Length: 514
Image (cartoon, rainbow, N blue to C red; front, side):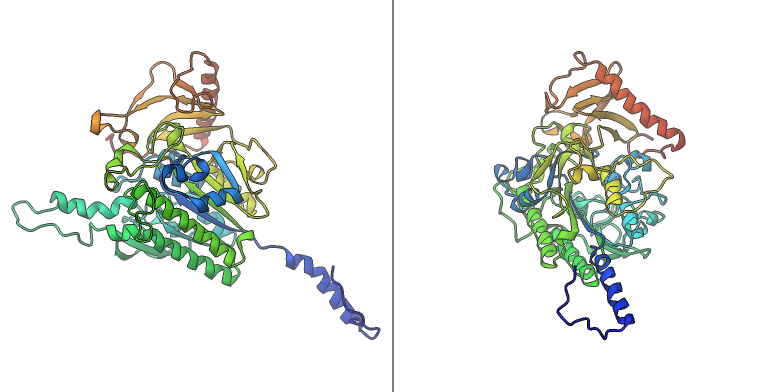
């Protein structure tokens, strides 16, 4: 309520003046309403459930994560946050709010057989752009667009104003490709003494683009740049935040940086800071980068109007790249109490960390064990910014605002399907895991290959059933004791199959069956 000093409105004030003052007072509450919230989504890569201090890792892992631990203290920590088994599928699910297989993206992308995000896909970028937001992505897209004929898959064709990062078809280890090409003489000309020198066509490049513009090469993506890439991405993110805050425009920043993905070359600033080698150094580095984003929001006075999410895209990569550390240390994350790694349908692959912070809206210091899928972010954000989702396709994500704002303990999800390539391999229903394929490591000894290179065989009798609360590591099959769980799982499968009648899936991705 406004209070005016004595005499501010005198007896001689005209009727028109009084009317103006009344109109001004009536407008004040509307003017004071906060603008739409900003959203910052930081996506780590292959960081496992047991890596961060707030999830039982951190100092105990030899790599303290104080800024992320503080983030959890100031916000909501999800302990049953579920994703898809690998990078491309999880990112497709995040962007579209759909199972990755609905867009033909249920395998890690490998050009030229890589699946590309369909032109008709509706993404998180488009959600925010249509709601009047400035949008940017700095880092790893991994949903296609880098090859001729696939430009429609670029983030800048799906709602993002700005894109800067690694090639949109590839991941962080592509910086090492030219070195291994030279090492093996794989592109030498037969019968010639000429040696292969990485050139324009085979050397990956940092790229950039603006909305509906061409993809431009910026500079070669080298191992040296790999070590410093996150510093670059975070600096560009801070610049973007500052520009939008200065313009007074709401923004959506998507920062999928490299923290956790092999080869974990740390920057010079953080090299040697952990007690476990490169992987730990990169955890400490990523933790500091998250802190810089938070500090920027506070410095600009916009943190109270910004929803900040930190999450990982999937569980850790482990044995398949363990030799890529330094001084004999493994370059691999930790899945905590769960079994498995990146590329499998196991709990350790699809269950990882997620923290949400929004001062004044999300209660600080809270933890939720409600089931929350990476697909749920899209409809949740849509509800928060009062935006609409398309009605011409199934949206598999569910609105979880009740969970975020403390109106629900259980949330609105109780099941989740897991796909690998063309196959539905598992179902999660409440605390139960039901497997339709038996995924197990291939090879023996040093050539033991789990994850992406695991063997898989269909179950010809009954599915395997585990209770992950009784048995988090999935060591005891309990289908005999609880056979009714299979019936419930099959009901979940049938509901999904019913959606395919009106919305059939495109051909699934494939790099092994021709």
